[in-house]
Image (cartoon, rainbow over all chains, first blue to last red; front, side):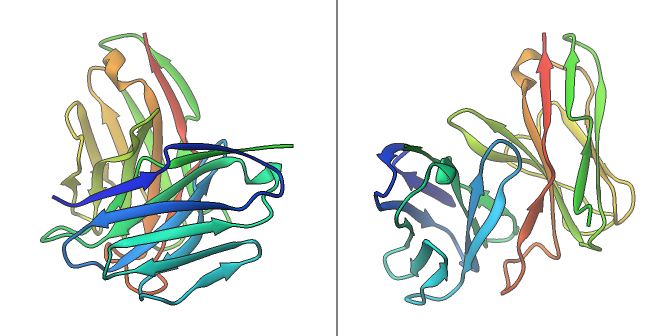
Length: 112
Length: 116
């Protein structure tokens, strides 16, 4: 059965810290892995990863995919209180039916 | 750009009442989805529509029905609301089901539903 597991479930850090969020998966016919940031309302798109070893970067956030070991990480450097959110990982590609499968998310709280 | 619009944003229902959540997207996307989000459970897929005229069950379809009215609109109906359906509901859309490069999923703002 296809599944997405994120770790840790929650994390509390201080401003300026660097955090690494993990997303491991099992999916048939992998197509892509997506990261989202969810604050108070709808998730907003961060990255889409389709190839191993190619880092995607946006400001202080970066992400990379390892299709051999079946995981992705999301790094946030020099964290700020505005980074406090739930970070969601999603996969596309299943056997037969195609739909997005989301992990439970990692709740990040950054303290001033 | 409006993106994905869903209504209502908040609703309180009594057990046994029915209601419909409306969703519309203006991005000419083929695929649309309804998710529910509960604490510690992440986003769980209720129903999805690969394209206009088709709908399929997701992970948690029981107690819900959907209608893909046209390419723009995808509604979710609770026929007889139960307290277990208290949740935040998100409508979403994407150009297609498959995650080819450049295809992402866009979410509405969410609908907070409480069943008492």
